[in-house]
Length: 146
Length: 146
Image (cartoon, rainbow over all chains, first blue to last red; front, top):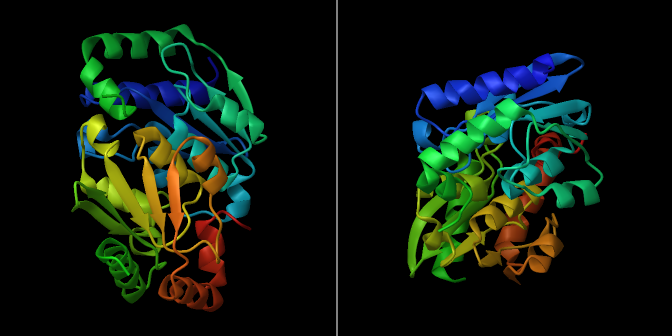
């Protein structure tokens, strides 16, 4: 696994240890990780800090031109909210750990010109499969399913 | 102006007094405001807390079924990120203060079945027009324009 996706997985595992939903993300600019984060629903009672959003938040305020040169790595296919943030900031390329346990707004991203690469990494799949089986109610809450 | 949109405008004006970007939002369930907020880019250095996102965050963790019975009021047409959050949580109806100074992802929302009502209220237009003229660089940063 490349070191950026490994960093996203590391974030997901930090979230899992905290009792949270194990999804992690990093934002890379010019080869350097400039933002990293993980889902904070449980830890902060947050409804907006999905992994990708937390990475964006932790990257801090950036000039709009920076985002357009970034690659975002995420352990799981980005939901409509995170996809919307990607489109707002015009991040051009997304590397997705897996889309087997959840398929986000990939078609909308592709139709909007974002380049996606889906790895379907076994460890990403295993982390989410285990969590969904253990805490289906938390997972459904996170993706807005009653 | 109806009292919910007035509450969203009140939030926008709180943001303006704080030195922030004046966009406010409230979420209404069963006639009651259950979340309110305003853009926090300047105040918190946040890249994800647009007005609608702040209202969602302040509403706290809710069962997915609640969102599906809500109406979201926002002083400005929702950007792609906020529209994505609306789609994630399946909020069915959005009342928009104005879309003259900025047109968000309204077509995408409509195509996804969300009902939109655009008021184009003069006070909402005046607040944003004044801010954009005064601080164009902050506004461009908020919507990801270099």
